[in-house]
Length: 303
Image 1 (spheres, rainbow, N blue to C red):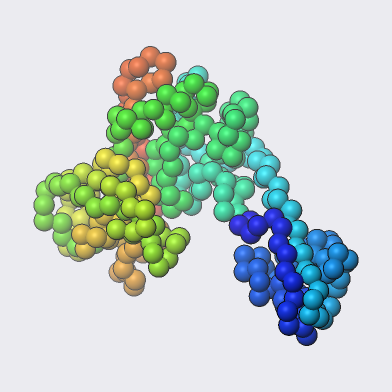
Image 2: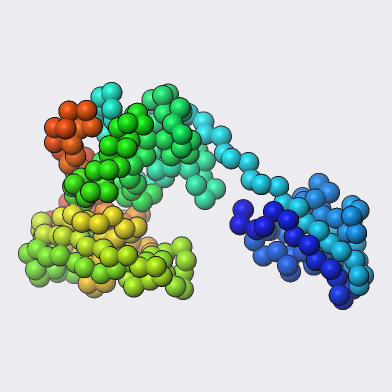
């Protein structure tokens, strides 16, 4: 909830219903939420309870006391997530498309964290109760290899590796059109979109430098299969960078092309491999995840 916890108004013009007045003043709360707060006596008129239908008169003082949101309680859920590797420090998974990594924005169940809590009960002891063990993320509709720390020490080790950019991430992406260069480096800063805050954009608000290296794996008549290695880790980086080149990802509803000729319910983006140093031994290892069936079938149809 983004509204202040307490608000106060002195009425200058009367005649308006209390619920309609509140709706005009507090845009971040739904009418149903305001009705509930009135019913719970968290809305007072001159210090007394009032009905939603109360007609306000000049000079009356309306107060609204919004309780702080209750922190979500995460439930361990037995969700089948393919495990690529596991030891005492970490677990490497092949995250399915359609799965959110951790709770947030109204999502508290069905996430990778819920699944990991069931598989690794020790994660419940992490200080960050909403993102225990999480050191990086994949978009909801991006599939592929991810690492989750099983201890706070391993988590700090992996976070440091990501910060130092020593962890190598490799993605496969199918993009529209024929990419002529065999390989290249895309450099374009990314920030929050100025017109659509839920999206990112090239040269958006509070932009940060972003670089993506790539090479062509295979060309088809109207598409190119790309191997991409993000040097930085900005939100939607690969999707935005190739869209900026005029080669948006196939199936990308946010940054791609409408009315596509291929049947694809999500963007063609898969985290193919992850190379890191093991927290305890320091030995460098690479873990991979094969293309899932939905993306493989698209490639088969193009051949």
